[in-house]
Image (cartoon, rainbow over all chains, first blue to last red; front, side):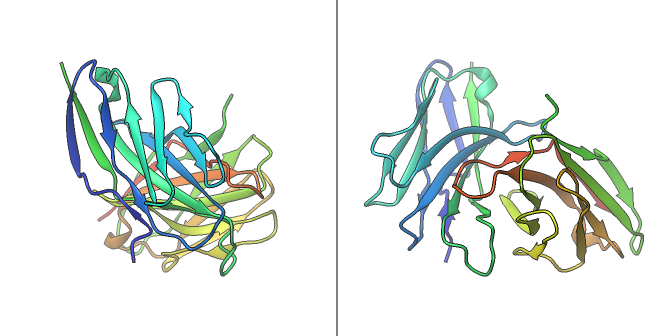
Length: 119
Length: 113
């Protein structure tokens, strides 16, 4: 079964509007972390935001916020006031606390959402 | 302010050739990782090193070997390159323990003809 599911291969948003990128996850580990990374066309992986499974409040970092709904196992990324520079591929990822087969708490990635911001 | 560095940035190999991808981090992290990213997909773990002196297989280890040379450096070797290994390779590092983020290098774009 997929551990991280991103159901939107591509999204479009008008400049200055808000956009939500969906992410659902699957884990039986009570302790885990959820991450969003941005990958622009230049190829580097840029860390955006982190949410711990025990965090009471939704994480925020500037224009990025994470809408964490634990019961639904969703961790959607909200980008407010979109800018042209936000056009990129966005990846949701998870890191589980339990070490199974010596996994050293690797990141498991979704397949990504390509966001295009329109002028 | 280097973070995680990788060399080379680009490489073209012929089938059967060997090469080593180099990775170094200056953040005093214990854990290091090698991922590959294929078109339209997220990253998949090849090998990792939880701490200096230890290495373990990830999700897609076949055709690769690794060496954790010291705390800073973690190399990935392709002994006999195959076209299926055409991909972008990312090195990452993180502190051991906890669930905080991994920091990624800029990537190596490898093409095997």
